[in-house]
Image 1: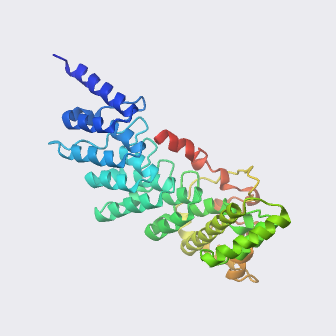
Image 2: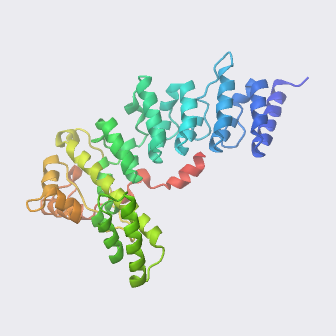
Image 3: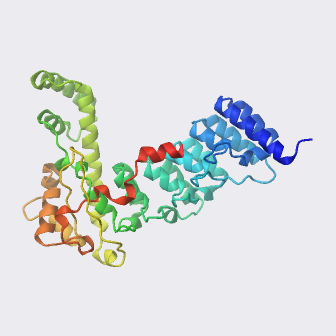
Length: 380
């Protein structure tokens, strides 16, 4: 008769073999007959078969495994995590798989706020990787279960979901976060960075910081507010054909889509900036500051010199509006960053009292120096 240890080893071996060969139906059978399989770790990273199924995108199998776990007299602990502290819900959120997020969170809603070793919750990771639908799904769980989403919105280094969305240039998601969690607008991480710092270090998020070639500038201007209209696309295609011949460019449709995406990003970034400026408060900054932001540089040829923003909301708005620049002119001409930079340098204004602001650049701020793709590969 096999000992308990030998039986566990047999279960582990069977799970590994079937997972590697993609025989998911066999794993479901093992879950049905051997409840001990629920918490059996099958990889060196400490993943269970459920982790493995989630990372492999096996929605149907995940649903079946969860359904089987629900039949257990003792509800299995879905908080079981791998070496990084990630639960299956962390993995599903990072992947942006809404169906898997729903089925896992429904079984145990508090998992939405369970932290990994970096202090990141599934809720946080959805924002970090720009998984808008998964983020909104987990937000709804927080609301319906009376969970405190704000408490799940920070990791150990003080970064919030808003810092992360802006840093990753997921500006549409950042806009939604501001609407849902407005208290995060003035949040400061341990390095002294606010969401507005991060946005100020993203010059390519605005037209003024994007180096467009002449034909790209024409396309950009031509897109206008009706960029999604079919007839506009047809006219643009004809324009591309003419310019391809004149400037000897190639990939007209791809070029148009690329520029359209840039304009979309610029539009969302401007909306985010407007929202941040609307809520920024010198009083709140005075009681919520961290360390002086570090200087940094960027080698990205697509970026111009980043510009600074000082702490007083009224001063920012004055620089934004300008005595001779209307809001429309500022947004349309790309003079926003130029106006902000000159006002800050002229008046020696800077967040947390940093005088040498002309060289300040949050592009390289420590909270996001790691590669998101590298992090994502490690999670999945």
